[in-house]
Image (cartoon, rainbow, N blue to C red; front, side):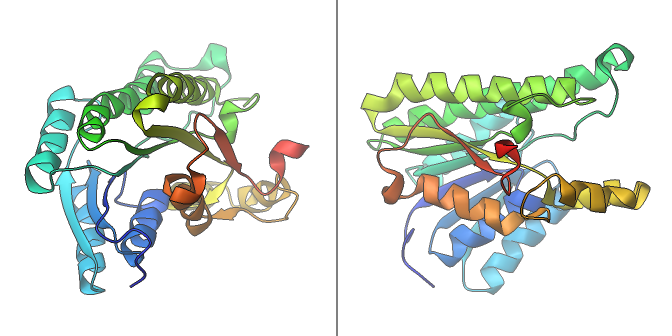
Length: 253
């Protein structure tokens, strides 16, 4: 075990799979005390158990980030059991739609906005007071390269991620002098279960997705995790309010 995050208490939402799972494992290897949250209790418990089996420190707590009472209960548990929160990765989100705007379904729009936007807002409003009690902390929100430009057939998803950047930047300014740094990580196409499901439906997507990135491949969840760990680290002490692309160069073209 490395000690870069030794004793630090880290909360990750959407921790049961993909980027959240990879980030939880990366923090745990560096000595963090992990609190993992997700609506998927079975896989969330499995991630926590695997970390503990590898001599890490992790607990799982079921939580729907849209529900204020559940998020409040989650942060109250952290306060009660750990007495502090040093880092939070607000990663819970839902899949994007694949329709042009005029063909989109209102219920899909509402769900995307609820989880991707309200969920991040809900988490931050309970995480920040807990961090303030101990002099500060670091928050990273999951954005997307869809927040950095246009995203055809993903208008609701893109709108939600633009909103995440608005929340991130505004809160970063509000709490900059209070010792809380708030940033966003903006992945391109990442090899996660969500991506693999899309490829199973349409195998050609694997090749077309790779072509979107100048590096010639899709990203790995571990590469996004590395960016999150950097943004939460002391090395990023002068970095707040940014949207960091992890995109294989795709925003350059």
